[in-house]
Image (tube, rainbow, N blue to C red; front, side, top):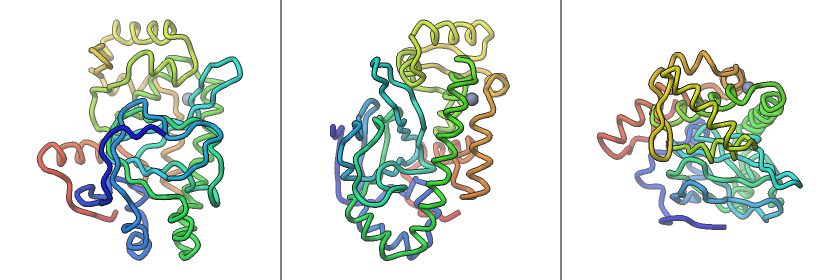
Length: 270
Ligand SMILES: [Zn+2]
């Protein structure tokens, strides 16, 4: 596992920028808190390769975003699920230390909280309510995978590109999206030229502009009108199963404004 940047054994200053952790009961949060470590990752950091023994679970915080990618036997890699601060990767939905099935890659850099898998298992064993919350999250992850299968099979490359951009904005609250056409193509398992055509088309309609290392959305409403309904369907399921956990652009904007102004310190529960 590549550890990108700083590591420190403290959650101080993080403000629990992960909605799944914020949804925990106070006693469950108290159980996990001493076990969580602050961790930072750069874009492209691989958390697991298929077959890796999952030693740690990761909770993306703030804008951090991880995608699960399945590598096919012809070498193409296809994104199957996107996990941001609404969730976690590794050992949350499974029992015990199991090998990873998909590659987990950091798409958006930022802060994470991580926990040793063995510590997480002990905590889950001692708290039925912790197990219950993670079981509900597992249901949401399954819904996301179902939706992703349908999306990859039925929706156009333009719709899927827009879905990614909207998912990014939901989490960062920022219309500046540091995703290259190369990254977008990689996530969707298509050649870069397909994504380039989509980006050029969106650019010609004044929906976005390209910039070094990413794109900037100029017309958010127009972009939203071009997306498939997959993100919205998933949000509705999250809202029914884990209310308040799925990120919204409004929440992200508020969080961004707060972190631009001062370091987040509050540990608010929703
Ligand atoms: Zn779709």
